[in-house]
Image 1 (spheres, rainbow, N blue to C red):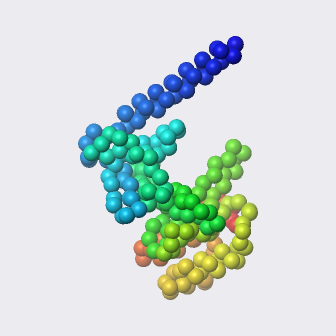
Image 2: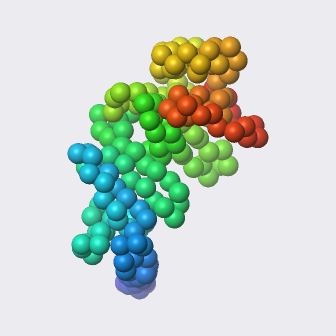
Image 3: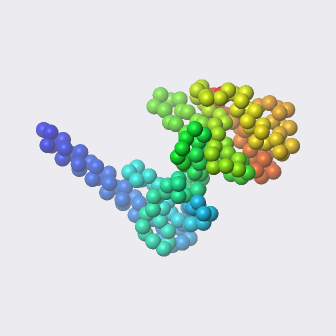
Length: 208
């Protein structure tokens, strides 16, 4: 019985591996025009590519010059964009951490806004936002969880420091005194681009 179980498990793993490989081959573009994804290396080089996603090997990319799949690592790649998912990922070091990680890059500019997402099997997903300005280290700005190493007031004051060199953005923040997800993203977008984000329905994230 144990032998049969081992054989069955081996066959299952083999089938999953073959299926993942077949999916990668099917998704691989045939011409340069079909390479809508890109990676930006730490030296600033931008490489058009096709990014393959595998449950076994994570995110890897291939270019028109080679069919070799190269793993996307946060210490080698600064940013990468997956066109079919419309998601930009950025490499950053969270405060109090020593190694780089990839986080979704919601806003890019003088101030970068990152999102870390923790799905839950209990129906309450956790979202954390991080910001950085002129540094590869990002500090926690907001979370749908309740545990913080810093107080809400301290995080609000830190955000004020980030935007105080833009009078219009700073005045809106201090006048309206809102610390919601929508407000923070709008202020960062406005700071970076000079344009505000059109109003949207209120978010349902918990407010901490």
